[in-house]
Amino acid sequence: MIDFEYHHPTSLDEVFGLLDQYGEDARVMAGGTALVIQMKQRLVQPSHVIGLRRVANLNTIESTADGVRIGALCTQRQIQNHPIVVGELPLLADTFRKVATPRIRNMATIGGGLVNGDPNQDPPPTLIALGASAVMTSKNGDRVVPVEDLFIDYYETDVQPGEVLTSVLVPQAPAGSGSVYLKFLPRTADDYGTVSVAAVVSREPDGSCPNGACTDVRIVLGSVGVTPVRATQAEDALRGKPLTDENIRAAAALVKDAVDPLEDFRGSAEYKTEMAEVFARRAIEQAMASIPAGS
Amino acid sequence: MNQKVRLKINGIDHELDIPARRLLVDCIRYDVGLTGTKEGCSVGVCGSCAVLVDGEMFASCITLAVAVDGSEITTIEGIAENGNLHPVQQAFIDHGGFQCGICTPGQVIAAKSLLDENPDPTEDEIKQWMMGNLCRCTGYYSILNSVAAAAKDMSGGRE
Image (spheres, rainbow over the protein chains, first blue to last red):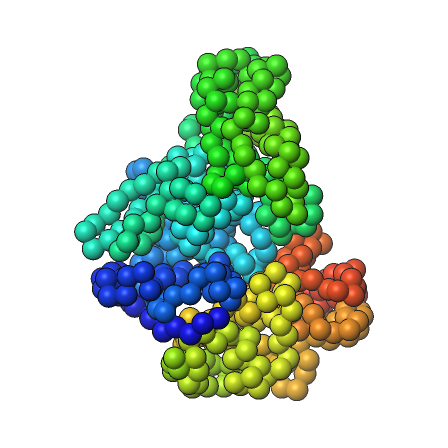
C-alpha cells in the first residue's frame, strides 16, 4: 500500500473542505472493506483518505413518511438487525443477512457499498426493486439519485466531485405485494452470488383468484453485468397479465436478453445467462407465493 | 506519513506513532508485539485475523489501525481472566477444536463474539456465524462441537 495521510473529520462541512482542498488525490472511506483491499492491491492510490467514522449523524435509521432513511455509515449488521428495518423492510433485512460473513457485515456500510459500484453485491438489486434513492450531499446541498441510476459502469458510480453519499431512502414494498431476494451460491455461503435476483410482485387484490393479474412487478439482478440489471422487458411482459406458470416462464425467458454477465470462476457468461433465467423465474414464483393471504 | 494512534488493547493503553497505511493486524503483531492474531488470506475472507473492536468482530487485515483510533481492541491474548482460560478456549482444548492451530485464535474470537451476543445459539446459528472462519485442516465438526460445548459451559449447564 502506498503511503497517505488519514483525516478524521467530525462534520460534513469539514469533509467538503477536505474534498475541495485535495480533489482527485482524496478518497472518502466508510467501512473500508472495499477501499482498503483496493489500496493494498494498488488499484487505488490516494494521497489522502477521509474517514467518515467520526462524522456525526451518519449512522442512524429512522422511519419517515417516504420510507426508511438509513444513514450511509450504518453497517450491514446494524441494518440487518434493526427493528425498523426488520418491521418495515423485511426484504432488505433478509438481503443484508445474506452478505458475506458476520465479520464483514460488522464493518461494511450501506453507503460505502453503493458508491463502490461492485456489480456482484447483494444490496443493490433489492434497493432498486424497492425503488430506493441515494442522497448525495455536497456543500451546495442534497441531490437525490434513484439507486437504479447510481450505477454507470463497472465500479463506476454517479458520485460527482465534492459529493458524499449521506443516506439512503428506502420505501416499503407496496401493500399486499410479495417479495424475495434469491442468491445462487454453488460455492460457499459467504461468496458473491453466481447470479442474484430481487423480485417484488403485486397482484390484483382478489384473494379468491391465485392467478389474479399482476398489477406491478420489479425484477432486478446482480452479478450478471457491469452494473446491477433491471429486467424491464420481463417486467413489461408480466404487468397486467395473470400470474400463470406460462406467463411467468415467458417473462423469465426475456431476462436472458437483459443480462450480459462477465465470465469468472463462478461460471461462464453462458452459464450465468441460463441461471439468470432460472433464478428470475424462481424469484417471481416465490415472490408471488409470499403475497399475504387475502391480498 | 506517521500519525498518532491511540488504542486500548486488552485493557492496556498504547499510544503509537505509525504510518497511516499500517493495518491493524500488523500494528497488533509488530508494533505492540502480540503475535497471537494471525494473518491468513489478507483480504478479509478467512477469519484468522479476527479481533474485537469495541466488542464487534473485525477483520484486522483489512482495517487501518488509524481508522479505529480511540477504540478498545480485544485479541486472543486478552480473553483469559485471572489466569483462567476463557470457556471457549477451554472447550477448544477439551473437544479437539484445533489441529495445526493457525486459524484457532480467529476461531476462538469468532466463537466468543457469537456467545457474547447470543449465549444459547442453535446448531444452525453456530454454523451461520462460524462459516466465516476457514480451517485448512478442515476440522469443522470439532470446531462446531467446541463452540456448542462452550455455550453450554458458559450458561452453567453440564454435558
